Amino acid sequence: AIDAYIVPSQDAHQSEFIAECFMRRAYLTGFTGSAGTAVVTKNNAAFWTDGRYFLQAEKELSHDWTLMRSGNHGVPTTIEWLNDVLPSGSRVGIDPFLFSSDAAEELKAAISDKNHELILIRDFNLVDEIWGESRPAPPNEPTRVHAIKYAGVDVASKLSFVRSQLDENGCDTVVISMLDEVAWLLNM
Image: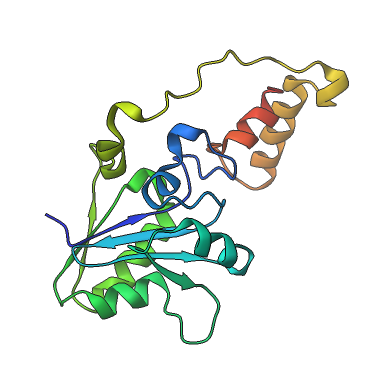
């Protein structure tokens, strides 16, 4: 049982450009711009976006949503709003795969000021449950390796460079999870 659910624009890789099947915030709100965060409580639905998208959001959001114009004077952040509208001791849910570890920890700390609890819903995404069978299938096209004339440097040289940077910085391992970085490293 949760009292609020936060739906960001990101996918599990924190990608800037995401596949249609991961456009959960767009599906839920109707807003098709690339930046925004939706928060749904039992009584409210609020949507934050920045100045690039105010006019678009006004046109695309239904009357069920309250548009929060991020950066404008007097407009609360998502955390400030949650702390204001939820009674003390509420439970705020997120899909932890859509938030960086730092963002989740920051959220957890900030809502704890009002004795709220962050709930990590790992087994399923609530928007996917609503979307159901109409949710687009994930991309399944084969990848291709770019020729050196497009990639500039072969994979072995890139791996060698990354390893040398690890050595220089006294590190043993690096985790590369952003899709564009994986694609660069493997010339895909």
